[in-house]
Amino acid sequence: MTVALYGTGEKNFGFQMDGFSTFSVSNVAGDVKGDKQADCADLAIVSASLLKKRGDPGFDPRADVDYDGDVDKADYLYVLGQIPAAVRKHCPSQ
Ligand SMILES: [Ca+2]
Ligand SMILES: [Ca+2]
Image 1 (cartoon, rainbow, N blue to C red):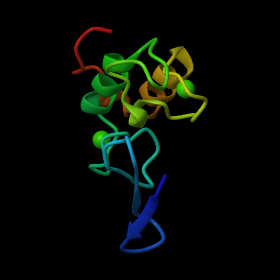
Image 2: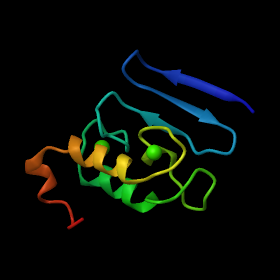
Image 3: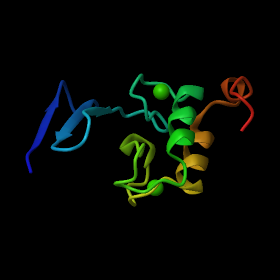
Image 4: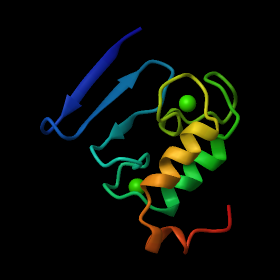
């Protein structure tokens, strides 16, 4: 397995591993998409992988915000909690 690290600074980086799609990690809490803001799109990513485990079809590693190998209520509630209330109320009903 190879792991490549890249980045433009200490706050933004990404990594790539064989068998996984490339994704970036930003320093914004709850931002799983990597656009530097926590919003409904991030919650949608978590929702799409909810109750899936690493290795399951459709599992999105970005959604596993606590890196415990699955996407569960803890991941969901974490992201939900990072979305500003004014933004959250515009998200599709959860
Ligand atoms: Ca985001
Ligand atoms: Ca998790």
